[in-house]
Image (tube, rainbow, N blue to C red):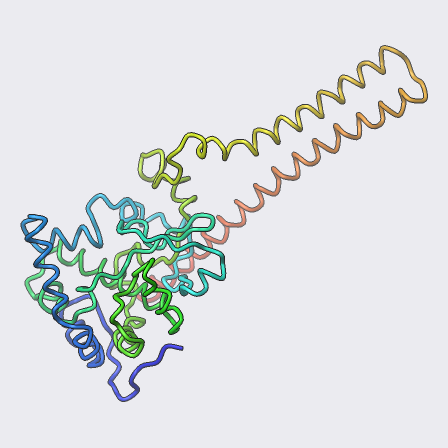
Length: 329
């Protein structure tokens, strides 16, 4: 399990400059151990990409202006519980049979769909205390820098939950993933992240007040929240796209065929008169029609029940948070 240095003073890390500088000494020592030269990578990227400044590089890394998830952040409670700790460690992701997919798009970080979860790797320079001191915690920070700092803090905090055990770090450093730089030891990582759990939701971007989010729900609500047909396309082939409609279409065709076939038998029996076999055929046909209608009604009722239950839970949790906020004020 995660461990830290017990002799160090526990100081809450916050998103402002003084808060980060006042963070526990272990954070400084660990980040220095991870190599303060990582901050130089940022300067290199600024030169090679010709962006005109560090801010643009950082914004593109953690909170681009086009980030749809930030735009929809005020309505994320429709899709997920507001709980920043709702993030399963990497080993639990494998237990859930989820494939970890590496993405460099910040909006997809911790979004999951079916058997896949998207995770953005941890850049080397964001683990450097010198980087935070020189680039993100300057006293003359503008509104744009504050936005970047809050997003970076929230993004960094997610790794406190993703890597809880040494086995999680081994998974993160797997050559096929490279979520965490391979030269970081377990002791260094524990020292570095020991105070990240103290970061409050008020100090991070609203998006990071939530944990994992279902991509299917983001795509479902995208037309309403973003005015787009989808949040993120996951099928790029016509065959895969239309395959998801096969099941519902075949189910409707099957129910319709049973009902129409039963009605045809009922009409035929009515025209030809009653008899031994005709009576049995009539009984079977009526039973098939009734059973099909009951099945269709039950599935529809189950869908309504599940949607209502989820919305009831979401509204109740939202009201609870609003009451806590009013009480704190």
